[in-house]
Amino acid sequence: MRGLDGLVGAVARTLDVPLGKGDIGAHVTQLGHVLAGRGELVVVLDNFEQIRHLASVVDQWQRRAPDV
Image (cartoon, rainbow, N blue to C red; front, side, top):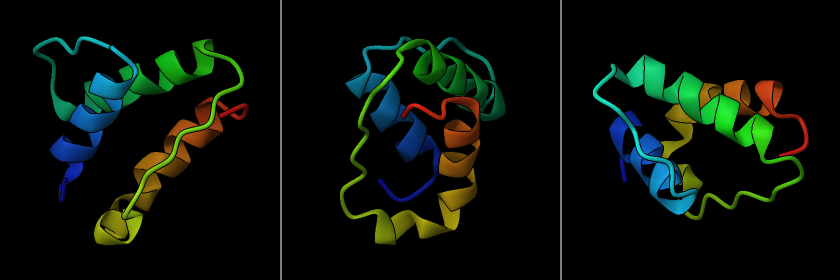
């Protein structure tokens, strides 16, 4: 997992969230809504240093879902 597609795909698979054919921005938003709806949750992104350039996506999810 090195890019945005990999991050979004990995999180979606882990949370068992099917992604439609929308663009990657729509998928990021969709996962933010899913995370917010799950309530308290711990998400571990192992080896995040390899994709730290995507920290803004994780920040977006955390702002949308502060209990994650």
